[in-house]
Amino acid sequence: MEITSFAAHEILNLLRSRQISPEEVVTALSQRIEKVDPLIHAYLSYDLERALADASSADVSLPLGGLPISIKDVISVKGHPCSCASRILENYIAPYDATVILRLRAAGAIPFGRLNIY
Image 1 (cartoon, rainbow, N blue to C red):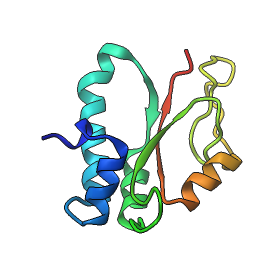
Image 2: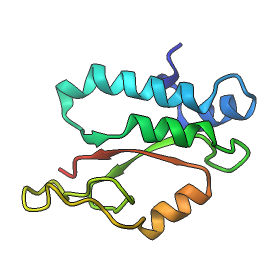
Image 3: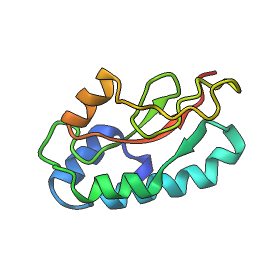
């Protein structure tokens, strides 16, 4: 069965039992996005290289350890574009992590991509 077909709690269980690695989850998500997103246009961007780097040091014992998450394009993630799906902000790169991102990172989540807001 494909990793991306599992629910988040199932992926976390597989990560904790070391049946899969965070890098495998990130890679599977990237492959799924490349296959499906041209049809639905949900992602504005994603940073595979950074997500893989974060995955390599993920602590799977944390509540969300090693789980890649996508963020709506109205929430700042340091170093990621944050355009709010607006052409006016199309070149804006967030200089900080929003509080929710800080908390998600502290729980072990890996911010992966930017989702369209409409």
